[in-house]
Image 1 (cartoon, helix red, strand yellow):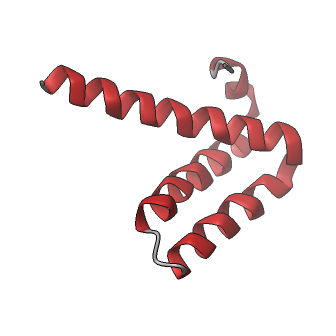
Image 2 (cartoon, rainbow, N blue to C red):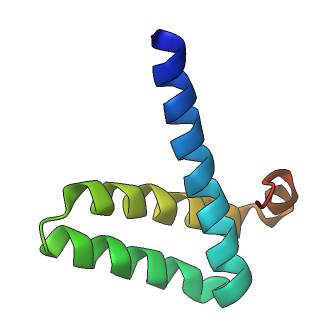
Length: 77
């Protein structure tokens, strides 16, 4: 059971990083504004799960913008 929980958490984290990479590829430095906007909108609407996901995505976008050499480490599917 613990393995399944870990696998699910790892999969969710991978989705966040892939999403961050995809947004950066499409929007460049504007990706951070998009992720933060989605986070804020969902939080305002009361969707805490969605806001949490976009909060993590915004953090990943910010990190990848500071470390663009790491973009190649994230595979796209």
